[in-house]
Length: 347
Image (cartoon, rainbow, N blue to C red):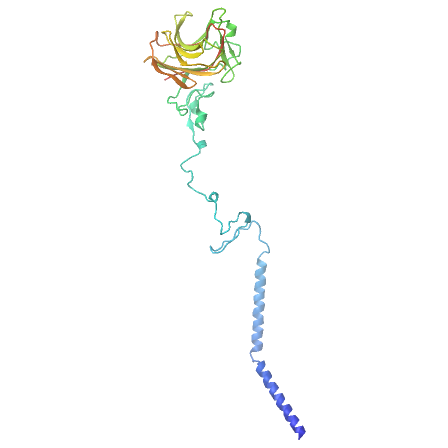
C-alpha cells in the first residue's frame, strides 16, 4: 500500500514538471527557419556596413572642399582660423560694398594735360601728370593750363636757362654784351648759383669804372601783349631786367619798362622815370621770380613777385612801341647778380 502511494506521487510530479516546461519555453515548428533567416539578414547588413566603411577615408585631406550643408546646420570650414561662428557678427571690413567709391576715382587715375615748351624744346602737351602739384611750373615745362589756376596756356617763343653753354663763357648764341661792366671776362655763364640745373648768367657792374654790365637779346616776335618772367638773385641794389629799345645800331637806348632791385626795394620804372614800389624789401642772395606783363595796345602794366600780383593793369605812357628787346643788367654798384629760367610768351 505504501509503495503504491509513492509511485502515484512520482507520477504526479513528473506530469506537472513537463507542463510547466511547456508553458515557460514554448517551441513553434517555424522557429528554426526564422532563426536562420534572421542570421542571414544580419550577415548581409554587416557585410554592407563593412563595404561602406572601406569607402570612407580615415582622415580628411587639408585641401578638401567644405561640405555643403543645410542652412539649419553649422559647418566648420577647412581653415578653422578663419571660421565665422554662427553667433558672431561679421565686421564692416568683412562686408564687401560693390558700389563703394564708385563715383570717386583715385587721383592716380586722373591725367591732367600739360601744355607749353620744355627746356629741351619738346612739346609738353605730350606729357601728363598725376596730381595738380605735379603740373605746376618748374624745371620741365613752361606752363600748364590745368594747373595752379592759370587761365592761359603759356607757349614761350623765347626761353633761356643758360644750361646749354659752357660755364665761364658768354652766351653768344642769343645774347649781345652791350656794356662790359668791370670787364667782359666777368660777364659769364656760371654754375656758382642756379635754379634749374646746372647754370645761370652772372653779371657784375663797376662802381670804380662807373660802368654798367648790360646784355641784350632781340625777341623773335613782338606781340601786342607780352609777358617776361625770370629768376633773379642779387648781392645788393641797382640790378634789373627790362624791355628796351636801341637807337639804330649804337649802344645807347631806352629802358621802356624795367623791374629793379634798388634802395632796398623791388620796384618797376617806366619812361617818365618814376619808380613805383612793388615790394617794401628783399633779401640779398635769395632767388626771386619776377614776371612782367606789358599790354602794348592798351598801354597797361602788371607785375608779379614770387607769383603774387603787385601791379594790376596800371596805365602808363610809353615813348616807343612796340618794344623788341630784353635787357639784363648789373648797374654801377660792384654787386653781383644772377639770372635764370627766362621765358617770354604772348597772350
